Amino acid sequence: MKGLVVAAVLLLASGTVSFADELFWVVGNRATGKCTIVTSNPVIIGDIWFGDGPYKSKTDAKLARSTIRACPAVTPDEEKEEDGTD
Image (cartoon, rainbow, N blue to C red; front, side, top):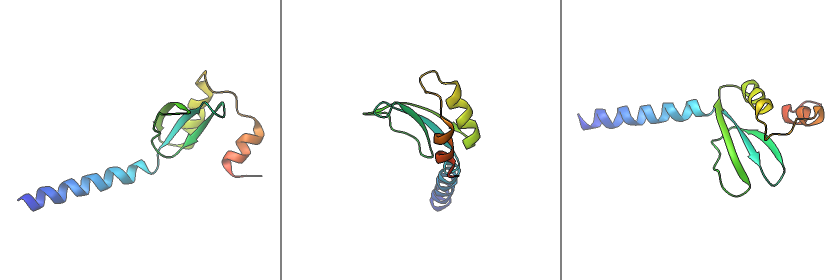
């Protein structure tokens, strides 16, 4: 019986971790004065002054970033760089 419980807990934990791979957060960086989108849950220390999320898609995170007053507007060049397009 204990083995079954341990197996269920491990299965649940591994499933939760796999879902976290597809999440996005908006992070405010005091050093750069910008807000970036990251794929891991941010730790709020040092230059990172806030983290907002998680969001299910990068598009949702971009929309959220545009509504956060502390985040400066993203220029078209920064947007291209972020998307990896030229």
